[in-house]
Image 1: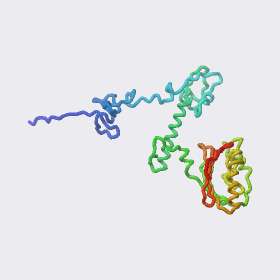
Image 2: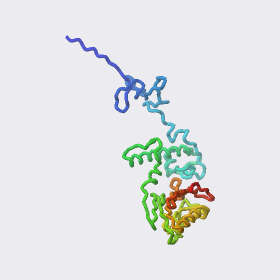
Image 3: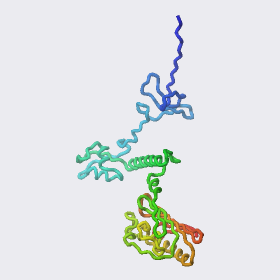
Image 4: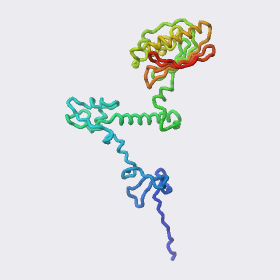
Length: 313
């Protein structure tokens, strides 16, 4: 009779969650003998002690209840007053809708509120943080979709979705020999020109009056990137909401210098770059580079009254 083979049994509670393989102590996740609900994340600190997440749930996942909209730290309580509606209460917060409030308070959207009813009203900071996180996620996804699945250089801070869309896919319009590069919301982003000394182009009062709307200010003119005296086109893409003082002061003085150079038979090449905040149709500054017979000059003009220009000649 052959004696039974002695088998040594060893148990390693540390496993890699992704592939189930054993890991060294303090790495991966800890699964105790006999199962149970004490699985916990691993990782050892400098002291050699295993780091454990604070207040794990029963399944070992860190407690994230503080991130929920219904967590007490993320909302205040509004006591319903006569005339209150979900829409009126939601209007107290930017980006909050009546439907959002109905969901948070488990209150039917079409049911009137009761006077004295307690309504959870999210803090603005909580709403802003959630919106920022959503926008960052969408920006990261769009970047990867348009870059063959590659991550941006700083994945934690990807280029904003707004900038990725608005700073690419420009179309080019060429009119009267001038090139206008225009983004997807019809804003001129780059203008390239070899200036001509006339003929003087006709003006469009309609395009001048509507330039920059809805972000145009009462103190603005409908300015031209390329002036009519240089045969600048009357199309809408050659117009912008321009502070009247800036239009009739520093910008006109620059145009006067170009006109003198053209009269003297010099070549004048111009590159104009309007700078916008977000999706505004009104530029907050205009950067201009020009070359007179190859000699470079530039100015950065704030689009405001008595704005100083920064540049060299």
